[in-house]
Length: 106
Image (cartoon, helix red, strand yellow):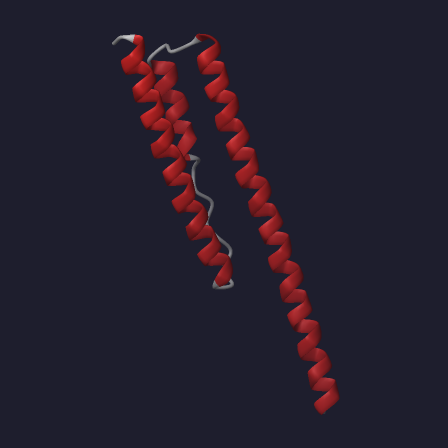
């Protein structure tokens, strides 16, 4: 496979991984909105890294793709953690308001 085809393949795989990550994030947001704890899903980028390694893409391009994938995963994890914290604070505030209303009425 020539370098152009390899690059095209890698870009296609990155697009697929990003799309899968966006869908997974949407599922997690929907779970949070429904008051549920989202189920952890494997990273779509794991398969991309394996595929790149198998194709021996190597060199600085592989290292850069690996860095980008790790960065995206970290950002997703950080975003999920912030969302989890916000949900917990929101639920705590809802309980305090419910208690306050109960005391005010009762």
